[in-house]
Length: 306
Image (cartoon, rainbow, N blue to C red; front, side, top):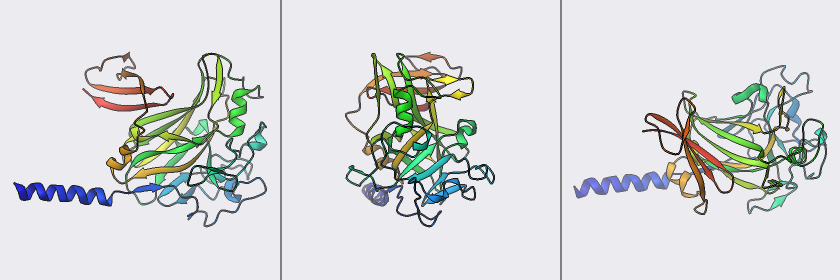
């Protein structure tokens, strides 16, 4: 018995020793081979529809949805790389901006010369609009990433704009939702963070690089992002569906994926939703979607069976 216990303990220690965090590193591109920034501080390949994916091993990030989808270099969606230091109000010409004024250094400080990943989620494409896969075919446990607003989206929420109304109604929201998927394409869980909102009579929005805890996604073979807003029209969301991100982090082990969760994160409420969409404060028999809301406005959901 002692030998068996010793062997199990040794295996556990070995697994822990081999566990590793993997962080999206924009200094290590494979596709494109180098990052060449143009006058507007986005990479030259942004409007090139020969690049359906950008690759920073082991991460693959969706870009253009097939040849011809850039409409001759006039359109793009998905992910691209920028390093704009512009963080004031402005229109579509400033879609590349980051309201923090630049990317994030290793110590968390802002650097206008530090590249970051920008995403435009094309609502038309749904789950395919902003997708992250892994080039090695492995699955990983998701930890999270740093996110921020673009100045363009932030000021469209804060002020009057040509597409929609300012956020001045109680409960207004603009949020980013992360979805995990397994090898079969089934969702493993979701996590969300509010980028802008209007609550208790006051507008607020993220203006600093902010950690987005995505550990509720669990073990995934891919991640896709969607966005939602309280400002909608006949053609969908009026709010410009942009966000910026940096240092997307996954782990080879569930232990390292959950150990860094903020212990100070306070739960504001938990609700259970059954397959018919009915909500309850107590779990239903069978399949439940458990939605946990935290006091910082973030939410996480997981699927459980009672």
